[in-house]
Amino acid sequence: MLNSEEFDKTLVIEEDLEPTDLEDAVDEPNRVLPAIEFRDVYLSFDDNTILNGISFTVRRGETKLILGRSGGGKSTIIRLILGLLKPDSGQILIDGEDVTVYDEREMMPVRQKIGMVFQEGALFDSLSVYENVAYRLIEQGLDSDEIDMEVRRMLQFVDLEEAIDKMPIELSGGMRRRVGIARALIGDPEIVLFDEPTAGLDPPTARTICELAIKLRDLQDVSSIFVTHEMNNVQYLSSEYATVNEDGQVVFEKEGEKLCLINTEVIMLRDGKIIFSGSDEQLRNTADPYIQKFIHGKT
Amino acid sequence: MNPFTKFLFELQEISLLLWSALTGVFRRPRYIPEIIRQMDIIGVGSLPIVLLTGFFTGGVLILQTFPTLEYYGIHNEAGRSVATSLIRELGPVLTALMVSGRIGSAISAELGSMVVSQQIDAMRALGTDPHKKLVAPRVLALIIMLPLLTVAADIFGIVGGGVSASYIFDQDLNVFLNSVRNGITSNDLLGGVIKPIFFGLIIGGIACHKGLSTTGGTVGVGRSTINAVVLSSIWVIIFDFFLAKAIQSILGVGII
Ligand SMILES: Nc1ncnc2c1ncn2[C@@H]1O[C@H](COP(=O)(O)OP(=O)(O)OP(=O)(O)O)[C@@H](O)[C@H]1O
Ligand SMILES: [Mg+2]
Image (cartoon, rainbow over all chains, first blue to last red; front, top):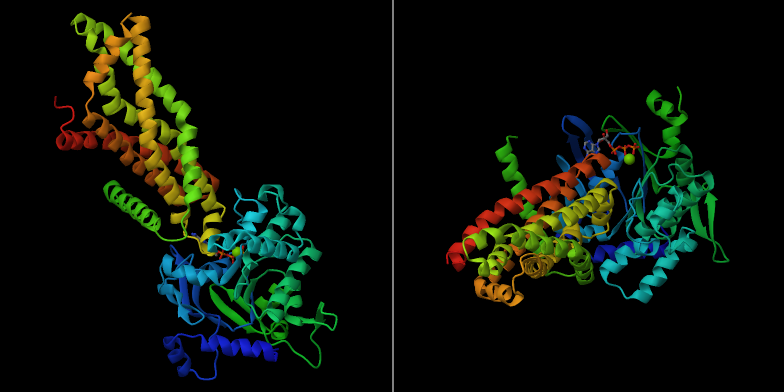
């Protein structure tokens, strides 16, 4: 669903590349560098193999939904992308840079372009909601008027303006999650990683969060990974898209006969391997009994 | 891992942590307000307990040694005995022990709970180096404030000694103060301020390392806190011996 403006952006990105990156790109012509790429990644904790040869790519502007049972290594994949963990072997590329060889200091500029929503929220509990959301901008040393404006915009985005001066301890679980989302999205990162952002939330709030992810994907060209257990999230994200109508309002429409979303894909993990990768229709129509059981909760 | 390898390993970890924290201080962004806040918590916050410790230690030193000095007829030198033992040894060591109990435990508990609630990961994910943001201000504040606290403890110790000498043993305060003045040298003072700088490094390094390497949830936080206090106290005392020896050889303090 690239419109012409987004297409221009893609071209600009390519012009910005370092010469070395361009050489890489020449090897595989006609291909914009993927936002995230895993190449044969292995990871074990002690003798517990968590990831056993994982390879996938997230293209620019694509949303990758990751499914898999609890303890299957989904959060681990996300932590690997941020360099919070290092794989035992294999490569992880972000915008074409192999981050597995980066140390903490080299990782910092890469992390600047990634927003992460933690499964447990992970808010700084000694800071107020305002300071939590503003954290990244304060660290970057922006001036306070600009920070103030951005923080208010983000809190409005997650519908939590009234909580701006509260401390995280005073918030409910769902509110904390939404503050976490606002903190991840501030500064408009190019890549956003959602780790079960809807778990334990009421259906309307969960729906709001899915809509947020859809807006990021369709209107801001953000690449993202969305880990979830809930099939209705998969349903929303892979069958609806956001556009702006004539009145300038964002509306969500269902894909139909004339249009089929190509910027959302599902991958499914099992025992450290990817056992499925494709669209949600393919997922639903697959014959694999494990996947059928996962989708329907029963065989 | 055998205990000796484990010890070397931890020593290496702590040295690396301190190195990365303290070299990071000179790169932007700098966290000056954070350093000042920590100086307030560590320095001003610890002042009451450190002053009390100093005062009563000085007092009890006179209480216990005055009769002996009197027996040998040198009770006019009581001030000197309190001042040298306080400034050379008891001031730095007792202050460091009080601070390691109060601040070492607080640092490792705070950092430890940030680790288990993934706040450290969140910080790294948001592009901040926790060594620079959390470790460096705490260690720096300790290095700056511990010598000052020590000096305050020394002064209150001498006051305590003076009070004890004049009220309990009816010694003229001027005799006491003269003996203090004659007893201490500038090298004593220098040595007494160098020690707490190293103690600050030891307490800060151990507490931050224990906090940041917390594993195993809230139970783990308790464990790291205990380890931080016990280890930093023991290492303050052990290191004090070697520092005393080094200061003796280099500054010639205590050789009379
Ligand atoms: N630091 C660690 N040390 C040892 N084992 C770990 C560590 N972190 C994760 N694991 C193990 O790795 C496995 C995968 O964990 P991960 O958090 O990635 O699962 P997940 O797919 O996100 O599960 P959930 O859906 O419940 O969040 C788990 O079995 C867990 O026990
Ligand atoms: Mg998880």
